Image 1 (cartoon, rainbow, N blue to C red):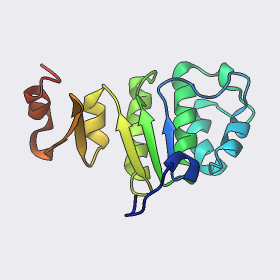
Image 2 (image 1 turned 30 degrees about the vertical axis):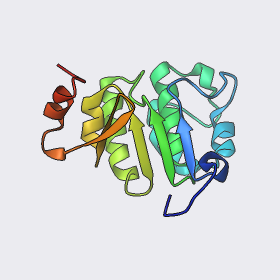
Image 3 (image 1 turned 90 degrees about the vertical axis):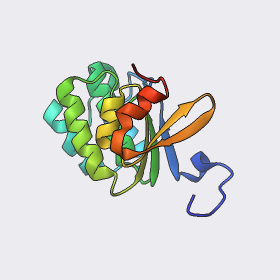
Length: 157
């Protein structure tokens, strides 16, 4: 990264990985998760207050989509310059997906974001570069016709 070798990016806090499964215990309050990840509380909450989510809210009191968004915004507002989001569009309603895509368009100018998701149309909408992992190899897809290239690789019909 930046032409330097880091034996463990996660330990260096340069990279955070959000798995597709929930990571915070149901009993944990949002403010504790924000503090743990050193996330910017004001920025995080600016995205969540419209969903009636407060700092005292426990993760177990949230719907699946709210919980996923809370986790994503904590990661986006953490000091790590790079994040990996695994299946970020899972559990979200169509309206939540559109709002998240708008947010990702802003955040990607501030940090490197890698998205791994099977909902390829959403990934295409927010990506600057698209790589397809197939048979252990990565393939950079040309931006002119990503859909056709996905067909050529037999990823979609």
